Length: 117
Image (cartoon, rainbow, N blue to C red; front, side, top):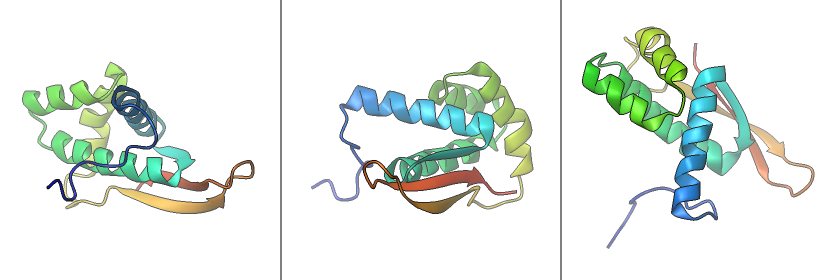
């Protein structure tokens, strides 16, 4: 049985879903906030928390693991030199999710994901 394994499928094929999540993670870490649907924001939040925790190690191995998840090398550099040291003493919970209500066209639940100061 595969209880609690993996995340949401988000109605997309696997390769599309993984590429979309990598793109959302890269944009979130570039701008430090993201407004999207609630399920996507929750999935991005899960992955970004793991990514920042990994970046806190500061080793070359950690740098390469983070670079494997993000599309833009400048964002990787930002995560390793700015964000990871900022959260060095924090034991987790680097992001917050704010629910924004429903989208007008299709009533999809919207949320904003942002980094905690």
